Image (cartoon, rainbow, N blue to C red; front, side, top):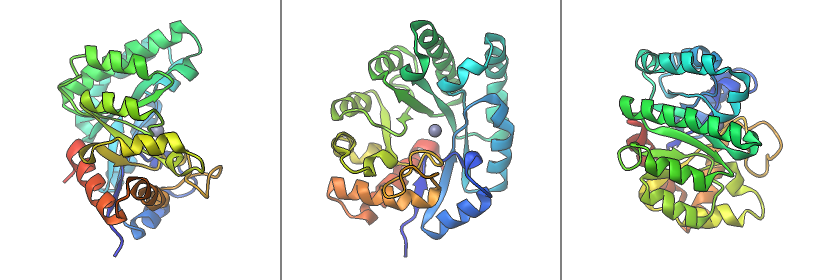
Length: 263
Ligand SMILES: [Zn+2]
């Protein structure tokens, strides 16, 4: 029997075709639950409806740093003012995805705005008692600084999703109370840095995800991703850690249940 895996980051609402079919195909390969993170307030209602229609799809609500350019300060404020109510209404299990993207920011002013919005969402996460799902691109130093200074740091677990940083950063993030999740890039040929980072994650902080429809694992790189490819990522994580797939499935599933409070 296939091990039961949890896809801790799957944009079910962005998948090609009928999401119900994609979910069914993933379930048939042993993916037992999915966390659906959101990007921007306009997508919150449809994602919430999708999660409500599928009991094994668990909702994250958040404002992604890369969506900020399309929103005015007033629109951001209105959305975040309403976010605590929506979290309760829809039974969200996470704040996400939120974070810092230095590549997308392009300048200090945009990065400072990302930081303000991220910090405000961390406060909402803390008040709701929900783990943040964190997107971080080319901003790991700043991320650690923000996380450590915020009241969240040390008081709330969270996850660095689709991690592509170094093994040294893994150690620092784990000391700061965070989980580390690996996606398709760890399977890409020649991906030595993610493999080294993956080996550095303690058993009780390791997660896996597809980030579908993005970041397809090998040999599907370049084509739209789907959650039925999570077993490819689990197999690669098992290989680089010298563990069995069953062992990786068991511990990542237990970690995901603990982090997101899944039954
Ligand atoms: Zn994502």
